Length: 229
Image 1 (spheres, helix red, strand yellow):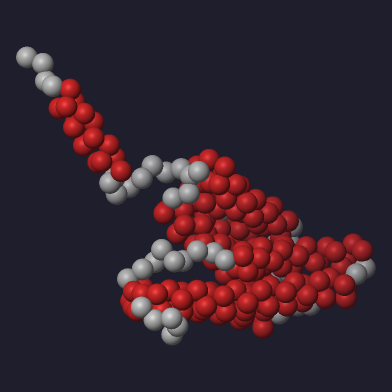
Image 2 (cartoon, helix red, strand yellow; image 1 turned 180 degrees about the vertical axis):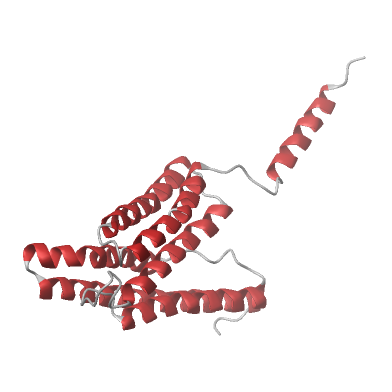
């Protein structure tokens, strides 16, 4: 006895529905690259901490950091070109950025990060500004989530992307500054390069934070049916 075609169609539809409702979607290549970036944080941290006693490890730390920065660009390009943007990726990608940059900023703010006193370190005010921006954003997300139950409004703005990119350059410049100064006798130029990038990253972070506040206010207003809050 043959089943009617409608039965097969219904079965196919049920399988497709279950596939769409699968709680754990397939791991895409952009997500794998993002996870690799998070895993590379451990060797980077080990190399940078041991560079205090073994200065040559600083170069290995620079290579690992450059690889993490390249992975940041690569996963975004692949996700856009292949249409593989996922909800998991929207969480992992900014999380990877925050972990990498937070660890780097904290370690390189100390004026003896290479093992001896050095003027080539990230200014404290720049580190405080950059980390405060992330703290305010997380606090704002929690407040809006409790008020509206939404999290889909959390999207990186252009100012936030620019601040993140500049912070990556700031960390890389700080790692390279001792060589720039000793090899080219540009001590003051190297110092001002780090300070200038720190100031630019801090300014972009402040603007990004204000933009997120604007976006959050509009989200709360639209949820409550008001024009503004």
